[in-house]
Length: 415
Image (cartoon, rainbow, N blue to C red):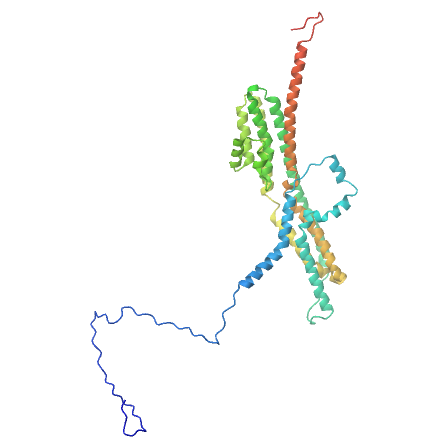
């Protein structure tokens, strides 16, 4: 840059001379074939909003709260299932004397905390009692003017409850009666199965006398004893059919039963094929095969009771009625009871939900029946019948021999 004669003034002129750009050939490689994108810059400013906080702590807290709220219902369900899997016992004379004892009421009261029915009611009873405490606390705060004046006291007339109480009572009675009818149907079905098993075994023991069929006869009796056990395992959740049948069936037969999709029908198939292998008259074979119809009928009744519950709309209606009844019960009773609504709600929920719980439990009849004891009784009766049949045959053969050597009046034995 050049300076003028006056040093105080600056010249803005320049000696820059423009040079022409060189001509590029189309195939020239002076320019890059691919342009790189410009580098990106991230502007950081103190005024920019901070990044959103992580939602993991909130999710963890929510999961912990849910698990805490589910802890009591899960515990109650486990108690209930343990009670359902408990082995029932057949009553004898001593059990009946204990059952009708005049001290039974005190005994039942003292054992309340051991009842799986009562323990399974802890979640609903605790929930409705807590709602009663909340409503009573709110109404007390309003009455003491601890809250602004526009907060109303939760109260209502008892007339709706007086009108609907008979409907709730009838609903609970019909629900329990329908469940008991299913229990009675299951009991009758197993009564017929046990009676049919005993009759079938008696016919086989007394009817099959050919000595060459002794092994087949023994196998047939084992199959007959195995049928009630297989049906029990089929209708009872958690049963181990392999463990229960290992003392009744041979290893190969047990493997076939375990691999089948329907254990009782597989046992019936074994019985049918064994009857065909026996050397019997046609009329006797037909008579024995007719006994199998009792087994098929028992399977059908048990599967219907297992697969077809009481109409679900009836069960849901009863549950919803009870829930709405006890949610509004503290509001209805507040004017008359005040804080007594808390124990009143507790007693009402414990009583009415207990009735509904019993109806739900006996709706599935088979865990309520002593099926393990019944199967053991059938097995013991058949083993005793086999042993008795051998003793009776030995006694009859001895009598026959004694009569054949009965002496004549002249002192010589009759031939």
